[in-house]
Length: 342
Image 1 (cartoon, helix red, strand yellow):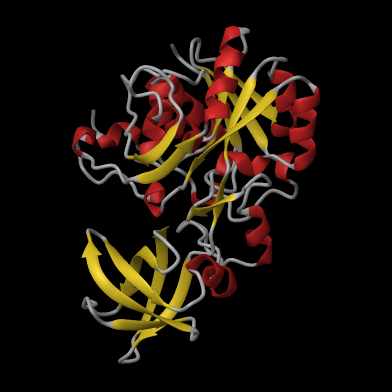
Image 2 (cartoon, helix red, strand yellow; image 1 turned 180 degrees about the vertical axis):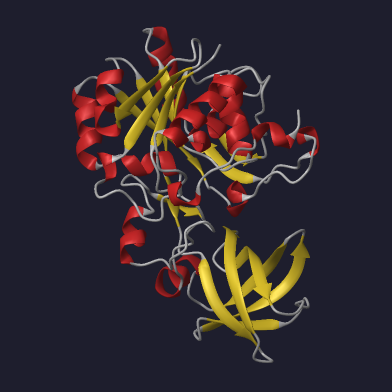
């Protein structure tokens, strides 16, 4: 398959620059992957499309304030985007500067602390933070929320709240699991009162989620790696739901990737590690029957994933419909509820 098979034209004005007034006030496009049928709904109506005994699986990762500004010892400006916190004093990061950076040098960040450029690891730098304060605490104090590249404004206090799910608890992501942004606390409680179970996995979303596939043949694409964890109680909840005939819905492509990564042996197993799973059409899904997701970038691995889930023709038709009906796209945009094709 070619990358161009997953391209589409999106009018710029349909890229949501700000969150909806309320979390659950977005629109919801339902796609039946078996029939291709589409229905326009509202997200607040989600509970009526679920049944007692169904299970929703959420990604509980928490977005860290991963963006920092600073300067080299020579005075040149730099921008750092933390990709992964390794421990209290070491991180992997994207570093942008006007001139190439040399390993072994130091940079000043936020006029508050210094970091040493230890080594290059592909597109990333290994940075050692020279501070007695743990990295996550430094980021919380001096960093800013790393909004996606297609959002034009700088992060503000609204973004700090709304570019974070209400159930976020495990710090480590540099991008939000955006399907979860539509849920507020009241809807989560309503779901539970209706007999719909909730479970959680963790996948720390990396900046690579926004990168388009740049090779012509998608089989040649090298997927970025992310940390994930699937706990024992989530595996147990999925087994219970399946045994009683309930359907398992992944809230977001990241929750789906975590579950499928944990099921590569053919059986869903609790555990944690790194995943670079690249799901494309032809993939046989092992766990999830429905997917709640936002609308994704052209030529992106996430668009390829949902095309695998619902069928390429169905997804292409759904996106054409969404554009014609003026749905809002990407992180702050509207949502889709997709029934698996097979």
